[in-house]
Length: 297
Image (tube, rainbow, N blue to C red):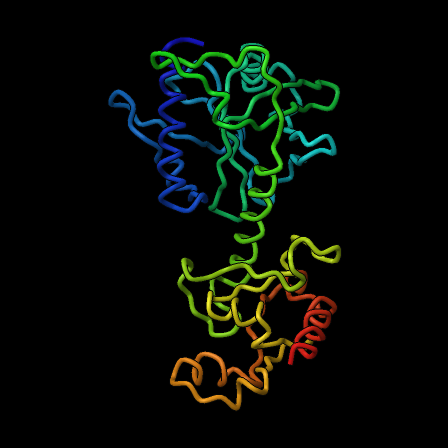
């Protein structure tokens, strides 16, 4: 890897760190296309093709899985990521570029498309395997400690075992769940229709970690932080036919306008749900949660 490639790669990593801190991990496609300035030249981080190499670089900088992609990029049972070639030509320059990154142990950025226009960056990732028969590479995610800097250069992590950590997988799944749920609900609270994305959570109907829980949109609700807390603490319940019930003792309580308008007036309302059937709250999941609400009441 030449010196300019190293410098741009490190600058990209630093820029991504700043942007993910600023935008809470998930970045817009517009921001990634705009990129950053390096020596008076704009460096984008993505392009329509999944394997991307800026003009100023000799080897690829990033790989991307687009939202709703037809490519079969997914975590494998052995915890690594399967990443498909570009096309079916094993000698395509992009595939050759990733193969060279593998040979030299060069770190890249992986962009996971969560919903249209939003991506979760993960770095550093390394190409650790090449499977021409299945037209795919094996990708490992490592932590930033694998990037050893010496006078602005990247030193290959000599003999270091590369692996995908549980923390990275959990973060990917959590962010994907949040973005998909909020996208399905058009970034509004299902109970009060508040539209400020920063004040919205993706709430699990069956809590995460339970055997019946699934990281799918039909096990999620887009709720503002007030109603998420109220739902988790069983101040409110939602019936399998999407009707809100407020706990009886809360209905009988008098404690100012927030309680009155924020909770009590929801009683008997029907929640806002996505238009696609596959994204609507699963009635079976709601029933399990509603029965718990009744016991708590």
